Image 1 (cartoon, rainbow, N blue to C red):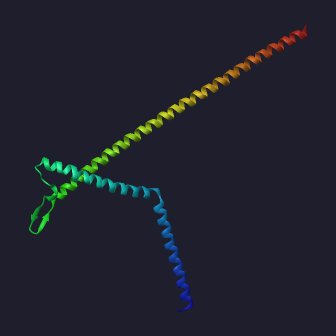
Image 2: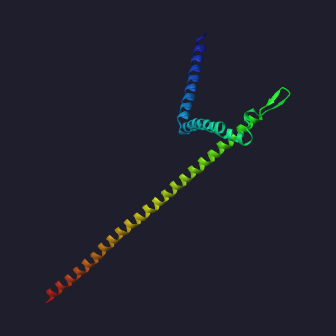
Length: 172
């Protein structure tokens, strides 16, 4: 290989390394952002929640529904058409799972919204109380200043009277 070709290869390798390192650092930045971590936690909690709801449906609700409709097991419901077996019972099971998960999330969101609303109301009340306290403090300071001004006016009047008396005594 020629010296020029080796030099070009080195430059190309440096450029590739720069791009790879830049991509890795951008990925690290993306991963460490709060939103990605929150999303990961949400996925994990959602998976666990899904398992709980699936157990609730499969182990508690479906047996009760099966008893109510005559001991039927939804998972076994199917239709055979030629060589194909259509498992519509499994589909019904999944729809019920979805409805229960949706209802649970709806209730959870309603509760969170109530808590958030109460929290906001409490914050507003506290802000109003703080404003009232600040106004009361400012009124007290204003009264103090007014009293000082009144005292100053009284003192000035007394000084004026004293000066007049002194002048009167001196003119005698």
